Length: 307
Image (cartoon, rainbow, N blue to C red; front, top):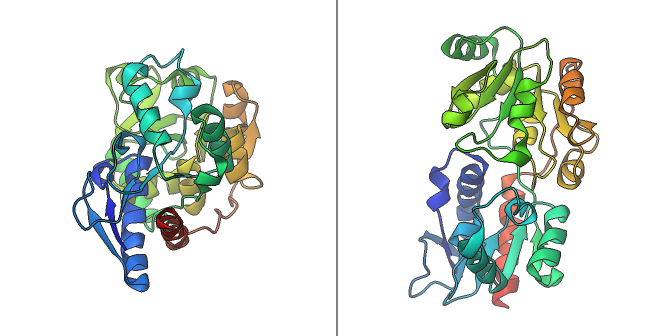
């Protein structure tokens, strides 16, 4: 089997990029083990047996071979009133998803959304969890001190990780910034002008995985105020670095983090900050799932799609 894998999102520093990079590396090893091949491209070419788009933006309306699409979440479809960028392009994308041979999703919660909102047969939807990249582990004191010095961070801080290029209401970042707190709040991710104007927060901008691991390690706790998540990869990464997690109580986050995080009612950001400041180490271990297991499960989906 020769699989064409759309690697365009791999350049993205956000979770979707980490998913594409980690899965592609593991898939290459899985392909070698099974006598297959993985090639990169955003359209299948002659000789390709199957096409995998690891993001919904890469889904094709007219795939020439069976197509697999990874759907990380359906937040934009669920909150169309808040996120007005859906429109025609969103409708065409949904049509492309309906034409996929199989969908891969990170949680059962997203699988249920896909079946209900896209009309996809549940038998064509496969739940394959994500995992922290190898860079995410507790970092030594000198690395933590260096990253604190680089970004002028205090000894103790709360951490939020995500994309700040444009305001997404469901992420509740302004409410998090405005919530009463004793510890400083550090926001990690590419920041647009709106984010740079948030009062009372420390912005690091975009960082690489090693620097992010040090930021996780040095944090008092990670806060995740959005209940509408598809998986919550930053929470799993934080746990891998030994950092406690406080999250909004939502279906996907509860599914991934049950017994590993402190949950607060969705929307009660003040209570979330209070719980985060009260968090204590050691944090629970992250889920044991690995990218090698994800690649094995993904290759099984490829074989089922071709069968």
